[in-house]
Length: 381
View (cartoon, rainbow, N blue to C red):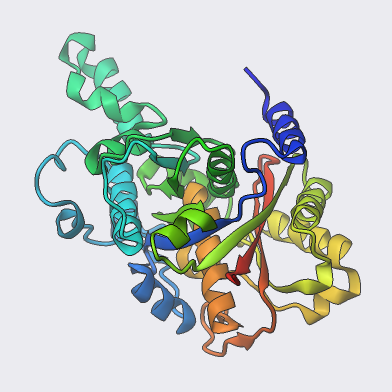
């Protein structure tokens, strides 16, 4: 098994060799979003730009402040058949997948249509409930039908079954950077010809176990799912689809401030752009004092005095630290910012900042040392 660093190094080497269409342009033709801030891209965008925050004390979680999706009803998107066996993570991911597929106008059942999902904890509540049941009642009384939800790739597998996604199916676990890693992994699958279209992003649910852990860290946890529909520009043109965005350079590096700075440098270098060409930065800031200070230092190292001229937004103040879904949600925010040519206000304010340019940098930095950055571009033929 390759380590993350070795796999990344090998992947970068392959990119330089020009194997199997590595010069293909990877584009975004649709997106599916479900979060505490809004269900669907339109509602998510409206609430984001109004300065609203979804963070509030939760009766469900003993008064802890969280950004949760209240009264989740999957039936409008998934129908009533087969949803009883889907846990919360699987439902969230399947809903986002349905939105993205509908937006892209793609037929399900295609063996070249895949899904790559990033997550931190997976279906944590299903895992703990299953184990606790076995400990309390004995192995003989455990419900075997619930075992399927206890593996880390349960949500990706269940969403693929629900929507007949027969192509590549992978789950990426890279801490709070999982969502961005998933987008890059999916982009590589397209470049290597392993798929024709891939849903890429992340999912995370809120449960007692995760809420208490993040509350101890002083961070407001959130939940949701965001998936980008990625395909090559060539295939999008064949389908008569105008892309929304283009996925450019990705960078990743371990450690903290040094690693975060290196991840951003890699992303800019692989996108062949200079720091001053970045129109806006969607930061990883989650409210963690240590983490936010680390990111601020890393930004100063990469952008220097130029940083004062680049608008920076911190959307997790609106939808919480959505863990595995956070990177993908932030990529959606970057796409909205480029199309509107303005970044959303910080939650609690209403004034958006204008931007000028076609490149956005998205950061996803984790307390575990996983750091990732992605450059996306406003689509231009």
